[in-house]
Length: 116
Image (cartoon, rainbow, N blue to C red; front, side):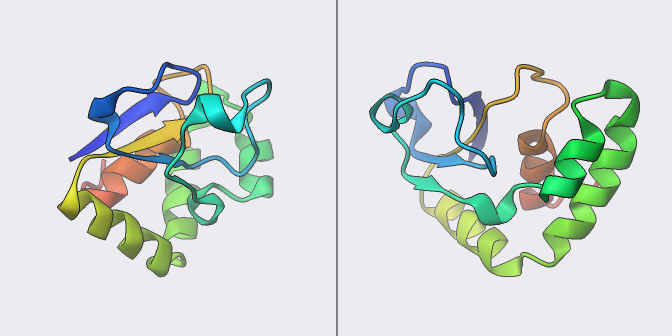
C-alpha cells in the first residue's frame, strides 16, 4: 500500500516506511520531527522541472508528463520503492502545500502502474 502525506503532518504508526520525495529539505522541520525512514532525492523532480512548474496548476498537465519522463530514467529508485511497498505500507512525504498538484501524486501513480 502506498499513501501520501505532507511531511509537516504528525507521523503515525500507520505510515509504515516514511519516504521524503522532495529534493530540498522542508523548511523549519527537524530530522526528529520528520521521522523519516529514507530521504530519496533521486525520485524528486529535477531542479529545472521544479522551477518551471512553480506549483502553478495551469502547468500541472505538462509537469506530470515531464516528471514521468524523468522517472523513466530512475529505475533503481522506483524498484526500491515498489519492493518496500510489497513488504509494508509506504508513505510518500512531500512538503508542498498544494495537496492536489505535487510530485508525490505523480510518483504514486507511476509506482502503482497507473497512467493518469
